[in-house]
Length: 176
Image (cartoon, rainbow, N blue to C red; front, side):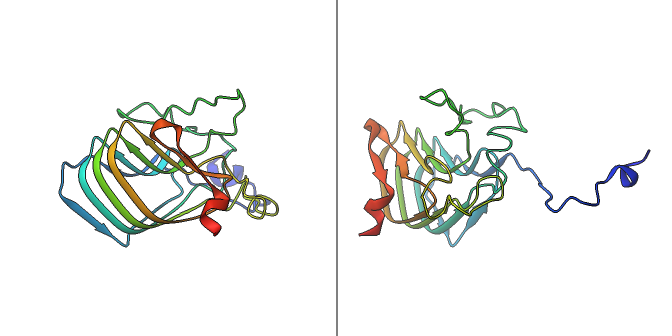
């Protein structure tokens, strides 16, 4: 039987998987304006050991199919230094979803107007967008210094991010 004969004509959704979005390792200075990185399994943007970076008006959306499969699947997720581990503290798979933005071991990072969105759980948004529970978090800052983020816009998460010193930004903080 060939691939055409095996195709299920009743399928209404096709998933295309990409492992990683935009990886920035530059020592800078670099300026990024009006960029988008969306639907990758591990992360949309990652600054890893980067320095002297400015980003303005960036947008990301996490994969619509997650958590089926959970991140980093269908990839192994350890091909590059700095790839996220996706180890949930509560033993559940709720944290095994792609990051919108990770800033890891970086310095002098300045960002203005970040749109980070999570709209779906396994292609369904009927409850997650209104309840801010499409995924746990979108942003991670770890091992970094001199990081300034201004005007974060999010949807679909109870906590925007987790940063150095376990600083957590809650969704309701962005709605004042």
